[in-house]
Image 1: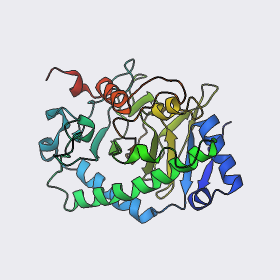
Image 2: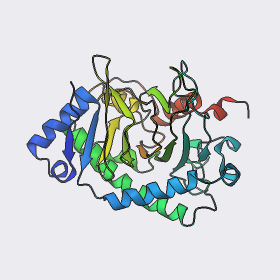
Image 3: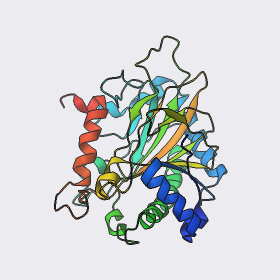
Length: 304
């Protein structure tokens, strides 16, 4: 059975040899790892999880004013069944709240949907500040992790830094209710998928639910307490590194327990070429991300 590498953030930053070997295994063989001893504490994680949970517990009428279905972007509340990550499964029964980097109006890229303005609810009190503070710090953890992974697979350290001056970050709160009693084989909290971007930094409330597909096709449960992060790598990073780093299928079927998780999707600037290094091809990060968003968010598939 595959084991998920457990990485100490301090040892990763110092490039300790044994840690770098485990990072390389995470990148090349597993596609997942856990991260401990980072700059985000269990208390930081619980604070943002509690804020999201309080939002999701509001009546629908209080969430409706920030429903992302009213927009042409993915900012705000996503109602149950508003996403479908696997076209062969039913829409996912979870709820989400998305926010991301919003550029100033005078920025030449501000019109792009991946930098769209955020929608913030009036309730719960302090929600915007808590989420933004967490996002700012999570970006730093994600950048340090990306630098470590790049070094572990033998690419020049710092070679990707200039691609993250205006990162297409997306912070999400996921709310997985208890699995519906009438759910069938095609019903998921989130169906099997690979993440679309570069690095995902996932915080959880400690409730089990996430499963990772192993190389033999079987599924491995991955659980982490608040303050231990589950990290995986996306399609964009696999392409960009010419397959040195692997994107891995994962899913949440759901259990009798409610679950809140908070992934930070850490992606490069819109105009970054993420075609395989040395291939001579062109694949803009923003084009890839927007295409995958249109395939997933059901409101983006409807005519404007």
